[in-house]
Image 1 (cartoon, rainbow, N blue to C red):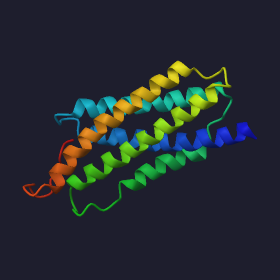
Image 2: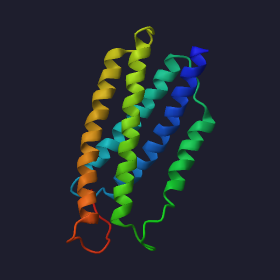
Image 3: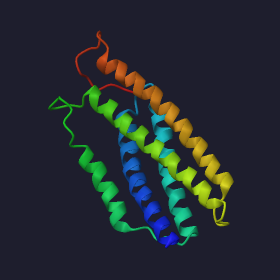
Length: 170
């Protein structure tokens, strides 16, 4: 029963991680030429690495990845692209803000899985507490960077002297 619950939990986070990788890569691609483009690309790369690490952990624990949850995460990310942003033919600064907020929420969710797995690790020798602590620290750093980018995007969108809605860089 405990293994079943852990399997469901890990697969739910795998779906979220799949969503997050797609979103992070899209944001990184859209802002590759911006002043903070390297930071965004680093975060996208780390999120992809973290997803891979989650798969490795699941494998070590004997938890199979459920393809339908992976597909659901990927589909949700693609559907999220359809959200109206108040501008018909181009991206708006509001799109960037919402995407950064969504990505930050996802990374905050990722800290929760690492914290939960640290609890599981107390009785599970197949889990490496040092690795989980490293992943938790890295996620906290990602949150800090995303918050800086989010605040910059919010200032561009909502400041009284803001230009008309134009695609902005984080």
